[in-house]
Amino acid sequence: MPAIEAKALERTFSGGVRAVAGVDLEVAEGQIYAFLGPNGAGKTTTVRMLTTLLRPTAGEGRVAGFDIVAQAAEVRRAIGVALQEAALDPLMTGRELIQLQATLHGIPRAEGRRRADTLLDRVGLTRAADRRVGAYSGGMRRRLDLASALVHQPMVLFLDEPTTGLDPVSRKAIWEEVAKLNAEGTTVFLTTQYLEEADQLADNVGIIAEGRIVGEGTPAQLKAEVGRPHLEIRLSDDGAERAEEIVARFGRPLPAKDGAVLVELERGAAEVAPVVRALDEAGLLVESLDLVEPTLDDVFVAKTGYHLEGDETQTGETEAIPAP
Amino acid sequence: MNLESLRGNLRVISALGARSVKQTFRRPQLVAPILVFPTLLLAIQTGGAGSAVGLPEFPEVNGFLDFMLAGAMIQSTLLAGNSGGIALAVDIEMGFTDRLFAAPISRFAIVLGRLAGTFVLGAVAAVWFLAIGLIFGATIEGGPAGALLVIVLVALSAAAFGGIGSAIALRAGKASVVQGLFPLVFVILFLSSAFFPANLMLEPAASVADYNPLSFIVEGIRDLIVFSLSLEGLAEALGAIALIGAVSVGLTVLALRYRLRTGG
Image 1: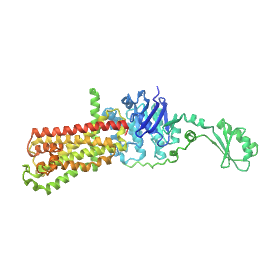
Image 2: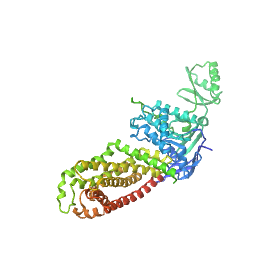
Image 3: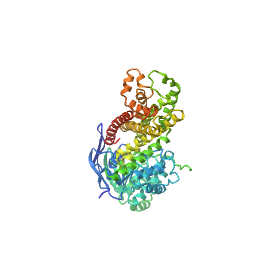
Image 4: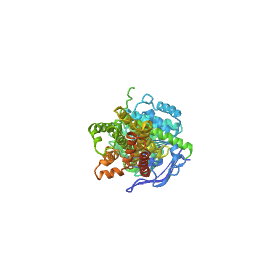
């Protein structure tokens, strides 16, 4: 049984805006699925439907085996949700928030307190536990949000852009925690506009653009779809034409870029040494040589026709944990 | 709904109510309308218009403060309801209600939790004004039982008005819209017998005040302070609260359905 399943899921808002235009996806139990797309692509609307916060206008979805419309209460019991922008009350303390979340999930008071302590420790917020959330940094808020989503030990965890706006250190801390949770058996559905995040974390990636999934597969499969690795060769003297003739024996030559000779290698890294040997035997002096793997950005460009802006605009704040 | 589910919902309502009360006391701009403004208005009116008790046909009271206490309390409940609505709208704006909607609880428990908090704030306001009254020489003619009934009536009124604030918050989803109702609160208040006897008002204000449900609540509370326990006054006050409560429940149900349908 897939942990998450959507068939022709659609959401049209009043005024005829079709935010999600027929999403089909399947996430196996224990997977990390990254839903990749730019702002306005339909990621959040899809998550809101799968987490029962928004009713689909067409199609169907199942989470943890339960129908997202007919069995919404069962879905809510099975999922943990950390929404975009960490929807936390700035007037509550971290501990109060997790204890409230425990109450919402019907966990007895004493057990709720115990779980709050454990989770705060897990996300490194023990020292800040009794401070108001308003005094937390962005990274601390995200970690608290993540901890609160785990209080009832959900089968499926939905994370809507968990690292947007975070600095690299905070982002890495969230990635590590997500990977750890997944290793413990939690299925994770993650939306992101960061290619690196999808590449680092996901078993499977779904690319969404204009409300539709335009590509899906493992990061390796998606990259393989758009091309093989290519070699970028820079020579220390003239001889580019001769070099192009030589490398053409090993793969498909690509148009030169900034004076570099480019060749697509069918067998990837395994063919680097023979290419270097052939150039050397021809008396050509190689200045630098790079094996360039296709990136998810290449995949994104191939699937949608444009670059994912978010990856270039990752900015974050510096996290500082104030002294108690 | 089985007993276990009822117990679970009551626990959620009580937790959300406690959060609502803490939230109010941690945010001075929410406390001010409930306690500070009505206290200031009470002080100004009592100090500046105290000689009104000498007007012909003014009710027989021990003092103007005794007369004014019910008005201050009802002003506080209206503003508590409005503040509760603002706080709910802020929750919607910052996405906190999504956290609640994504939990396996009754969605009505979320609103009831907010109203439970407003009920407690109403009770706090009643105790505050009773204490101020006693300190500054007012007498509670209804005795301890009357004082207790005053607290219950004020708390129930706060919850009933809070329902209207919550309905508007759920429908609009914006704190600024709920905040915009602030002046309306004063219009409704001054078109009741909260601060002045309806029989001494000019038309058409006098007729509006006669039928304003707020007047029935104020008079019910005032009777307990100024005169004694009056079953008729109490019944009228409870009837007015029930009417406002029924309207606010209806509006809240509609607004909640709208929010859940549109996804906010």
